[in-house]
Length: 164
Ligand SMILES: [Zn+2]
Image (cartoon, rainbow, N blue to C red):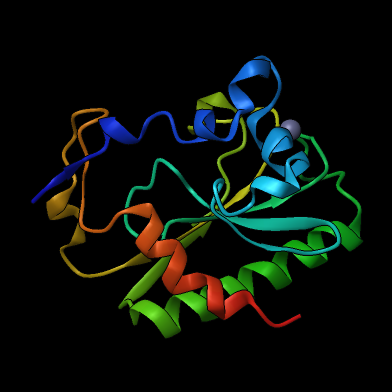
């Protein structure tokens, strides 16, 4: 009944991306357009894309990612950051439509000291939140219990991005 996170670890590996492990995983999934569904990419735009976090803190945990491989937000071209914001707005609307959360967290972790998991390729996190939702997370790494699998989340959210 409960799903533990550990069995899901090999997500990107299933897409054949494992052969080039030393490459940035966000660049890899950006490059493998034929694997968008396997990699849970919900939407592609000109400068970036929206993807499910395969290690979500909560169901509906999205990442908005520029194609540009950089850790420097301050010097990113305006057309890219503008589009990232547009994609974030669109993602929030999609999450609101599907999950009706009570709140959201959105933000970036820049640098390892700030908690970035993928340090060299910045990305925006967007998470739906509910009062008391931390009850189903454990503080023990790799054993977060998820209420919904990634395929289900993807199938719910994907139609919200299908236009344009
Ligand atoms: Zn990258």
